[in-house]
Length: 202
Image (cartoon, rainbow, N blue to C red; front, side, top):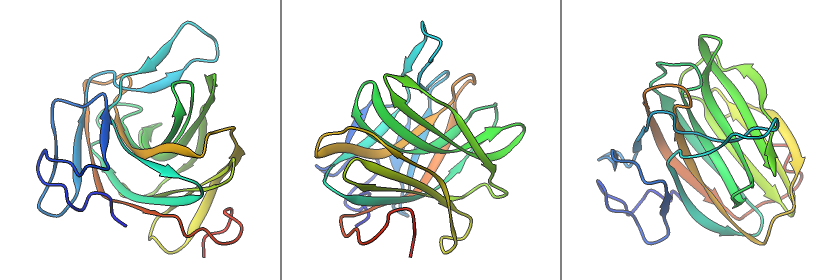
């Protein structure tokens, strides 16, 4: 199911909601979500303390139980850390995201897992500017994958997080130290038909 279906321009389906709705966004005629991240927009809780950011636009739907979610994203990468992400959220300080991000002057795959404080994991240079991103859940276990072609997937990380049955699942546009950037999400497909080991994508 593509949750962007039923959306048009700045009209969302009843299943979707914003945290930090941006000034500029739309679902275009191709059913793509185009989001303008605000300057300094980010989600991050610095493990060193004293710096919590929760200002990036996050469009989400509520999903109960096991699932997998897939998107394809292109980011107008102008400044370091400009990114488009697939994100899950159980609460303000319990969330995780998988990002296509401008890092070391190239498109890269990064991830953040937050359990009170955030980590920051650089996984790979993506080699392309429109990667596929995938998150899968089985109970309190989660797997992050990315793909360059939507067929062959590479695992980014596999981790546990204590979460309720229903969590927020969606997409985020970020520009943590920049003046804003545009992220285009081709779709957000969510399925609750999870079979087998979530570390493998068949």
